[in-house]
Image (cartoon, rainbow, N blue to C red; front, side, top):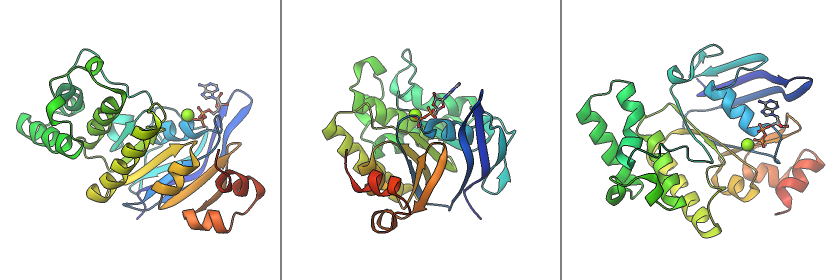
Length: 238
Ligand code: ADP
Ligand code: MG
């Protein structure tokens, strides 16, 4: 059974088809990176999977279940945003616990999960700090930790590294790859950065103009691009 399946998903804003008949199948445990230039519809696609945006037509299935009308909180997903989206008035531990409290997870279980995620992300010494007292890289690790504690069936990442400086971006990328190995989780990750796509992905989806250009392994795309767009986009670093 697939972890995520998109069938002919279309999104129209006004007169514009931002997404045009997207088909995608993600297997359990797969790290899928959707890559494409700015404005090609990556965030819209993730928001549709998360249930934060309605699609115009087509179907979204998570773990085999149709979720076209399922509210975000019931989809078994957790999303990490480029902007971190932490609560400024809550410390790190409370930021990580909030969704679990809402889901009525018990206190001890919450503490156990927060500690495990904090260990994984080297956040232990920072649990009592507020976001304002953290660096950008630390904030992003908290945002990732907040997703981990929810034990989602599917992680969604929207350009999680793009606000970090170059060195931190590489370090966090390695952390994400390790995390994927450790958790064995299914991940759908969008970025405009070809290097991120090539280094993180089991499978890459190249999106342009609201359409899937090609789906394949990094070496498939590099060695056998189906068109000039994919060849130019994957072949030539920015
Ligand atoms: P990406 O994340 O790849 O940069 P987006 O998914 O954010 O692209 O946007 C894709 C296109 O959809 C853009 O042209 C953007 O202007 C348009 N768009 C996104 N959200 C809305 C909206 N709420 N209303 C109208 N147009 C939108
Ligand atoms: Mg975007």
